Amino acid sequence: MFSKACEYGIRATLYIARQSQIGMRPNLSEIAGAVNSPEAFTAKIMQKLAKNNVVESRKGPSGGFFIDPSSKTKLIAIVEAIDGDVIYNGCGLGLAECSEAHPCPLHDEFVSIRGELKEMLKNTTIHGLAGKLESEHTFLKF
Amino acid sequence: MFSKACEYGIRATLYIARQSQIGMRPNLSEIAGAVNSPEAFTAKIMQKLAKNNVVESRKGPSGGFFIDPSSKTKLIAIVEAIDGDVIYNGCGLGLAECSEAHPCPLHDEFVSIRGELKEMLKNTTIHGLAGKLESEHTFLKF
DNA sequence: TATTTAAAGGGTAAAATTATCCTAAATTTA
DNA sequence: TAAATTTAGGATAATTTTACCCTTTAAATA
Image 1: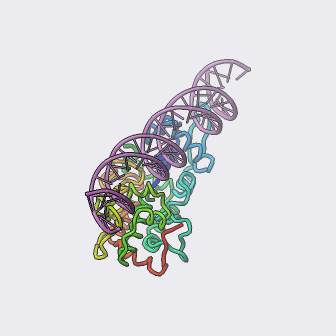
Image 2 (image 1 turned 135 degrees about the vertical axis):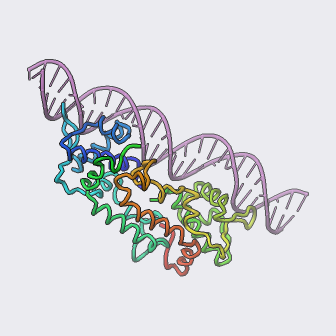
């Protein structure tokens, strides 16, 4: 579904969001430990997310990553920054010229699935998801 | 969404199905040409699909691939043979232990999307899709 | 039955993705 | 202001996926 990089990116961002909600600013090694992702690879992903303003970063002692708890940023911002829009805009058979007017045989079958995925990503906020991490209702590791 | 191998596999199988409907038995080079896929790579994919009884193959002169027009084989058979079931059974965040009872933060958001995808793959027949290729209503190349 | 045709299968190569390492730049704080 | 900490960024390595090549096996037919 998503690339490994995107999975790590979502997990890391949700962890950061939850920590930001409780006034913390985790650094890379804490994040990678918390979401069980390779640290150096996660660093690259975080760079991309920071450049795309999905998260904010701060260098130096007591630095780390955070995301304003009042931010309304949606899941789709993470996915677009890492995997692009192919997952919900691309053709299921990988055909570049596939469209409503010139469809592949699977086009109609995919319309509602891709639409539902896109809507979900567009409507789901990072902080809403992060809230679920409170009191171990949901988890991010393993 | 699907791997390249799976995209090629679906395109090739739909082409074979359509050709079988009109009494033809295309060979590898014809198939690869028709669906614009690399021939040798497509050969590997077809081996897998033949072993999984998604298509039948015949060696020798006038040999090639075909799929009985009365077959009720569904799209899911192709996807499972090539990509496995991760796409509709796996966790959106790549967490092995994610389940209804022990969900990741995205679990609920994904339930209906994965369900719809799985149902579509389970209910859509290869020959039904292949029928759409008649009179260029849909296409498989480029 | 010999020849030809085409899939099966093994091995290798190229490309993309995932993962790691090291240095530079920025920022805090002692 | 110097030292320590932490992200940014460049370079490289490992792994996986995609792609290709060549030989073997099976089948048709001349």
